[in-house]
Amino acid sequence: MVLTPNATVAEATAAIDRDGYVLIERLMDAEWVAAAKADLQRVLAETATGRNSFEGFSTQRVYALFAKTRYFDGPATHPLVLGVLDHVLGHYQFSAPVGIQIGPGEVAQVLHRDDDVYPLPRTGTDVVVNTMWPLDDFTVENGATRFVPGSHRWEAGRTATEEETTAAVMPAGSVLIYVGNLIHGGGANTTDRPRLGVILEYAASWLRPQENHTLAVPREIARELPERLQELLGYNVHPPFLGYVDGRHPRRVLSSS
Image (cartoon, rainbow, N blue to C red; front, side):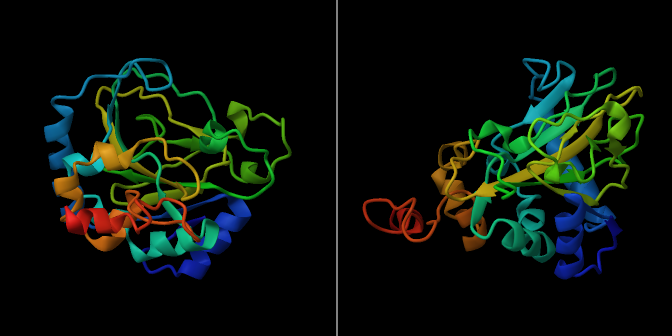
């Protein structure tokens, strides 16, 4: 389902529950898009292309994102996004925030589920939610994310075909929110220009995140961030006490050091 920036959390979560995804067009304005894209180009100038076919041999990936740019602090904690996360995951933190620039000639990524990194039985309970933020207009030709609506509720063992996929065609500044067991993959870029987007992936806070954010983001940077962003980077506790440091809330490490 495609919604406008005025959409409510209830509308977004209803779409997520039904289809496994929701697309909210132009949630961020053109000024933010231009500034965020320029800042990431600064980082991409020193970023190598992928090391394997999953990363993409013609694709650049910016890891440790929150150590390198401040432009995604706002999107990461946008009330509409957090409302969906509260509904789906309850308690959560970042798993894998990554800037992704798909270069010309890149082939389509293999279809996959993001929560397959966790060796958990498929019970229908979501443990991962991903958000894709395009900084270029996403088109079929430049590698818009492909996904299979409704595949988050498929029975175990069922695989998807390319004919079942839908492309997340959307203007820059939009966001595609989808659950971790929705089948999806990056598209092929058949144009002569790169396509830039950022994924902010979240996981239930009782799971180990893909990236170790307390090491990836220097403590002197984390100390200056808003409290909610600190929590998303792992300075939090999953009730009743998972994640404590020396018997205390981990955020105290930031305030006392």
